[in-house]
Length: 384
Image (cartoon, rainbow, N blue to C red; front, side, top):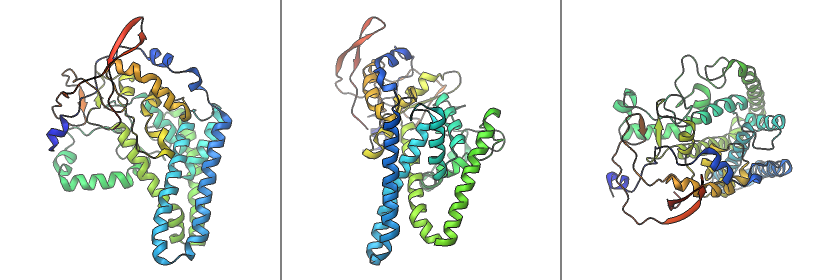
């Protein structure tokens, strides 16, 4: 099936004003979904740390006695499993930045700082830039990440817009995009001056935030020095096998997950004349990637953008609660919508193509009263 045929299977997300209010979504979610449970969160993180330590202990104490051919198999397996656990640490630190971990601001920041610093992510710096992303999701001018290239971007459209350029871009993006984003704002919003998560005077941050950016840098420096001492005593090869491999795998997975949650041919980006917060939040994507251990991070992303303070263990229930209301606007949290948008030159789509209307029967189902009126909506399609 050709590319044009594939595109006909997609309908763009509706860009008109949704026929519901933000409070309608909030009221649909059971109140307990907003509650953070301290001991439940601490128990979960304790299990994560125990698993990481167990993996490290087994790898560092037993892998070296295995036959060489078997060692070549078990080390990559270790990188994958430990890398997934580092993704869990990244996710927990991210939740701490939203204060959805336990509800105590100082404890959220302390735990998030320790977790993110260990995986070389400047906690407060990322917390501040990520808050900007949530405040301006899918804005062409002000979103922090996942901003589509315009045709005026000559390097991309005239030099890289070919099979070799695509392969280079994909390889660079998957392997180095996350650390390069932190270091030099690769793929991020355009700023005047040096934009870096490690530079306290970076235009990314407000004046009131710069002191905490410096605190993040101090933590990263301490961890890097500790890694340097490990390399000096244990050797660079050992350090790479035990930590470097899992860390690289973590960067790859974080990049892939965040890319999939914000990019799809049906998803629009808005300029300043069209963008508003609810439009941006509804233009995110839930993805079921199958990894149970990071499942609540990937397949409840829309509700996370709408209500970032909801803890991950309530995210699925909250997602199910708002689906009937989102269906009123034909807005499927799995990135599929049902009708074509109005013509508007100020709305940019991931792919410049004519998306045909899908010829298929649509399930009509009764929905709860919203605003005192009976609503009906198109049933939502399955997961991506």
